[in-house]
Image (cartoon, rainbow, N blue to C red; front, side):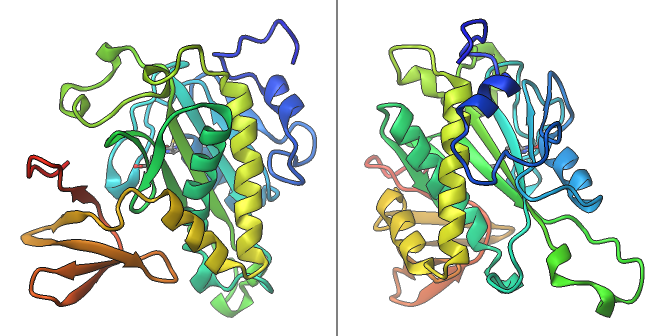
Length: 291
Ligand code: BTN
C-alpha cells in the first residue's frame, strides 16, 4: 500500500490495491465509487443497480448523512468512524433461484465475521440474524436489499438475469462517544474499543470483499449447508433464551436452530416451536435482563 494512504481513512486506490477477489470490487475501471459524504451507499447502489451497473460494483463512503439500518432504522455513520460499503451482486439465475436470495444476507454476515476475525483479534460473533456483536454489543450490521424493478414491458418480459441484490455493510471502527445517540450507548460498540492499535479500514474492507465473494460462491455452488454450518459456528444466539417483540406479541423461548433459509426456530416454554422469519431479538443475560 502507498505510504501516503492513511489506514484510518477509506481510500479507493488503497482498497483496490489490496483486493484479491475475482469479481467483487472489480467492475470496469472507474465504476467503483468512494464519496466523502453521501446520503446512503445502499441507496446509491440500488439506483446504480437499476440502471444496469455490473455485478461486483462497490459503493463506499467516508460518511453517510442518511445511513439506513434494518427495520427502517437509521445507521449512525460519522466521518471516518466506520466502514460504510455496498456491493451490487447479480446472482446467476441458473444457479440461484429467487427463493434462495435470502441466503445472501446470511453469507454477508458470516463473511464479515470471518474477515474481522482474520484481521483482528476480537471475540466477534453473529446475533440473529446478522448483527456483528462483541460481548453483547453491536459493532456492525448488514442491510441486504433488492432494487424495485422498473419493468418497461409486461412482467413476463422480465428476465431473471435482471435481478440484483445490494449487500450493505456497516462496521463501527473508531467512534467518539459523543457521536452515538444516548439511547444507543448501552447497545453499540466499535472495533477499536477492543484492539490495541488503529484498524486499517482499507485492509479490512478488502478482506471483507474477499470473504463475501467466497461465502456467496457457496450459495452459487449449492453449498447451503456449509454456509449454514458456518453461521451456526459463529452464532451467539443459538442455545440462548431469547425474546422477540412484534407489536403486542412477545415471544420468549430458547433459540434452537435456524431453518435452511435462515429463519430462527424458537422452542417456547410450553414446548411448542415457533419460527421467526424477521425482526429483532434480545438475548437473556445472567441477571435475567434481555439485551
Ligand atoms: C443493521 O441495521 O444492522 C444494518 C445496518 C447496515 C448499515 C450499512 S452502512 C452501508 C450501507 N448503507 C446504508 O445506508 N446502510 C448500509
